[in-house]
Image (cartoon, rainbow over all chains, first blue to last red; front, side, top):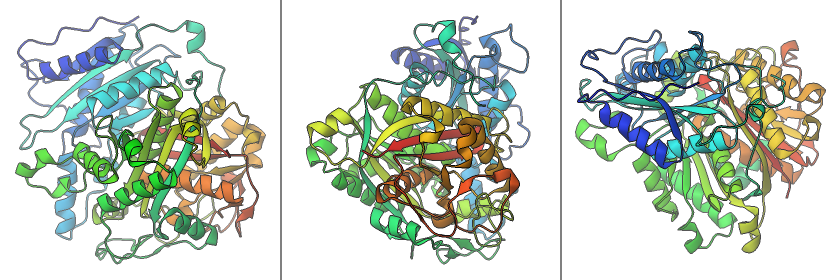
Length: 208
Length: 386
């Protein structure tokens, strides 16, 4: 059902991000079914814009690496969903500093007594791009954002162990300090160390 | 997949809350919070903390002056640990799960100063001021479900025996950046009141909120003969998979979160005696939440008393889950359910058994606190009287 994790492109700046995430996942007892990073190849020069998100690469980077990982997860699925019906995938974002580019722009406008663009309201929390991913790929599990890799892995492991999710998409992102240099993101899709019986995956039909 | 409900598994351990601390526009301390909420008088007033000249709305629920978030969080953590009768040596072994928007200093920091700032550094600072453990810290930045997610994670970890105790704290103090953002997004109520589930509701209003709880295994609490505030009987989290910022119009994700929380607690909807709803006062969100409650609870949705205490203390963003769980626990223990303030008239799409007029005198055996956020993130926490 799941594709093997592709080898990260040797020499790309994103290698450490992917390798670090994979190692952290394994340390937390999780199996990695797919991974992706930015930049991943020499052709990764410019992140594709994400409609509705402006002035910062934070959300576009998350969308890019998440989309790559999800599309590698199971190529047998329809284009608009990441997994077969019944598979619940959680989204766990991890960032050491958050969307500092957006936050700094808002602060500058506020300090200057200016209005802020309404679109900044919607991207003021990392949940918004998680919601985009959830809708785009039909990811119905919990949405979490934490600041540390270890916390992200532990949270994902517990969600899977407690059956709040079958799998978790974990995306790590941080913007460079100046001018886009050093912006990087990586994603892994993890499952529990042992698969659960199919009968357990499909609980009683909920009211929803 | 939006129709299935994951089997709500949990670890075998029982989880309790042994202490709480808070600050809000009603003042510092949980007693001020409870008496303020039970007064039924909303805490909204003109913002004096910063200028609002270029904003559409000029109202929030704020403490006097310009309190410092780190100081208020440390104070709430201390109050919670004192309430839980935690000796210093035990505090020093207890990790902190912190729910905040981020490091408040980061947005205006020079590049050279940024490496020393950030949510991790801020979490370490709060833990240090509170005398908590230096290891096992977490910072949650999941918008309005940050604190409730942290509490659910703490409970799940404790139930599985991974840790005996976690101090969970959340904090938001009304400040100009989020105020400007919510104003620009036309999310704030331009009539200066929050009217959850009411006809004519016009949006949310921000409010100061700092809350801390000591979440602990029942075994650990018993061993040290700690006072019990409540049992944390159930918790659930689920996503809408619908839209970046809008809730699923029928509340699918929230309904699954409620269902999972009830399953973990071993309860039916009719067992609930009170629901402190997310109830932001926003037109779409309240309608989706009412739908979710009918989906998850069935006919009980029409009889279980519901209020949103955001109509009183305002929207505390990342801290909401902690502040509102504390209100829910204290109100249930006192046997007085807070009023759903600001109500004008019935909205047929929000038919719930709202607590209207005055606080309702009844002592629920079980109560539930709900939160929802951008990204279609939803949480439900169920508490029972000890």
